[in-house]
Length: 403
Image 1: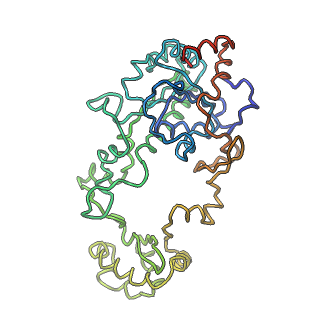
Image 2 (image 1 turned 30 degrees about the horizontal axis):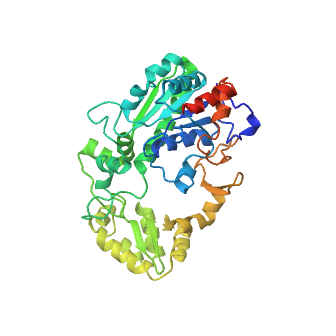
Image 3 (image 1 turned 120 degrees about the vertical axis):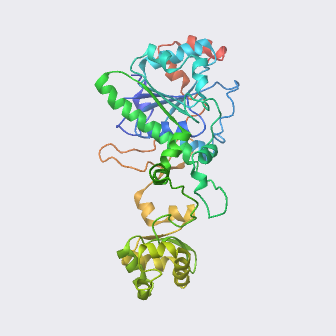
């Protein structure tokens, strides 16, 4: 395992994964999302980028000091290394000898061209775990197509069930295929690390934006696979649980999820409409499904008579699931969100910054945001020194733009 030359010089985000070293070759979003999961739980992550002045292609991560890049790349050290140079590849393989995980999201053929595919890395370190994220898979008819989130949302079926009925396909408001493929890759790495404790061997973890998007369809995909039912757009209405949807209030909008007969009856009481429980249009779940639009109109005629906050308080007191519909700033101002502490503030360096923290907790080994993203090549010299290179050797490598 590669260790920091001075452990006190670089803080630990957590002790949970601190025994693992991860070499990060990722870019854009899916790969960095994967590595962030490891870095935030204390893995020793080394972010590897091309040296300044060498064309590395468009990273599509936004400006380095922008919020997108900053939120994706915290808790890492960073170095530059030219993997198009044989000496750069040789240095990388020296790092692989002592590492546990390599993560990349190049197009599938790039690894082989560079000489850093799984077979090449396993020959150097049989315990290495290579995690690869691609648009469509490592092989097959679409393997070498460029993959982007919105393409996966469309091909993965999500856009066909998102939006209002008859509106036409709609993308969701986050790059969900990118994000989920990154999370699944991190989960795959964890599984491979656990298995390695038994076998002593690494393996190749693969996922793709397309597979991640299809998996995230969940019950909508199962409706087709098991019942040959093709789901359609349902807008803000839940496709099977009624009434569940968005309703106007006097000063905004709210969600109500009155699924099941008992909760439906509670909703009728809160709205002051107990007679709806006897109305043949609404009395049963099947009747409410058949008369969804009429029921939604009746509910909204009542909810517009009071403020959103008032309805949320009354319905929660009555045991009716509901909630406000926030803008992002309103969400971060909510008292429960503040209590959870998912917005993490970090001082230090030349900046004070807020980050989105991890969404789960460990009681003994918590995760913290402890380091801003590295400047380009910030830790190159220190990392190479850990490999045993002298100052003169490092200077020579810089002169040839190997690092």
